[in-house]
Amino acid sequence: MSRKLYSKYKIAELISKSLMGTIESTEQAELDTWLQNEEASKLYNEICNQNKLSDKYEFYQSLNTDKNFNQLQQKIKKSSRVRQIKSVLKYAAVVVILLGVTFYWQNRASEQEQKVSQEILNEIKPGYSQATLILADGTEIALDSHKNESIQTNGVSSIQNKDNVLEYKESNQEALASVGYNTLHVPHGGIYSVVLPDGTKVWVNSASSITYPEAFTGNTREVELSGEAYFDVVKSDKKFIVKTNTLNVTVLGTSFNVSAYDDDEFFATTLVEGKVELTSQHAGSIVLEPNQQGYYIKGNNHIQLNQKISVRNYTSWKDGKFYFEHEPLENILKKLGRWYDFKVNFEEDKIKKVVFTGVARKDNELRSLMDMIAKTARIDYKAYKNQNKTIEVKILKK
Image 1 (spheres, rainbow, N blue to C red):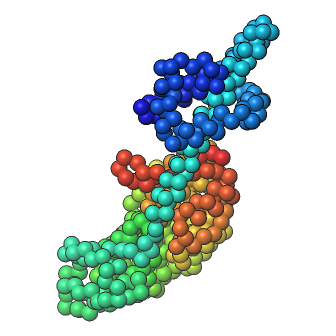
Image 2 (image 1 turned 90 degrees about the vertical axis):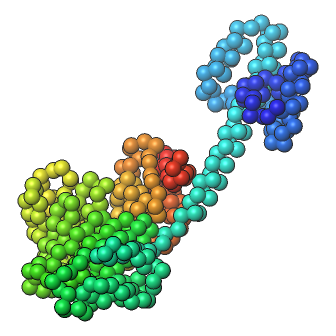
């Protein structure tokens, strides 16, 4: 019979009867069968050590937190002195062994769970230079498989993929009347850059996509963004417009960051230099100066202006760093989840509001980064795979 078929209470009862010499033959047979398991035998020898039994009882008695244990104590106090001695031996054995069995298997389960958690975290590796280019005709090209190559298209531009930067140059002026659109998609764990036909450079963050024409032919330069990107826009008489599902950003030439993830409750544009205008059909417009941020909570009709912000908090990702300054764990873990490709949930909502400050390289292993956050923010965590084989990280109170 397997150890798993016994409850911890049944095991405690069999062991206590064995120690007191009151075990029956059928019960002894059950105990012997259970002891055939190597771990069970080890547990039996450990918790039945006569030198430790009294010390364990005194320890558990001092805890005095278990309701059933308190009830047992009351029963002992009401007994006669002769019966009390026998009862103490009986109840002490049951309580000590029961708690010993419980603590042992809980510790074993906890150690095994921690081991599995660390193994899962070790599986997570950021890809860094991964991206997929979708051409106007629908052709998909995995860029990490075409490093330092020219990409042939039937459009108006030549494309060079070099050093994790996709660069466009107009080459076919005769085809300008039929300009197609390309999309650069960056998955979880990736960052990629693209130099657009006008020379504007864009850094695209993980879990993000940008769609743009092979050549800018009209009176404006328009691109569409889902996710996050940093723009270094070349100056021109043509306005450069970044369209998102929430707000539009309009500039002539400047450097700024746009965060417009669909699963975020907010939209944010952080200006590094120059001037940008944010516009929304429902929330009006606002003009930003350097070191300012336009912040819009979806569903509201107001764009908030955050002045004198620390720009590096919002732009360090493009340089391969995480930079967090008094940021809530909810925001931090969401960013880490997009980079390392995992889901996150919290044991309690109040843990989401715990703040953390720190800097780390984005090529660090997730395990070391989580250990640093756990130690500093005084939280715990465990990783596991759900039914869909998706990795989840649960944040626990310490």
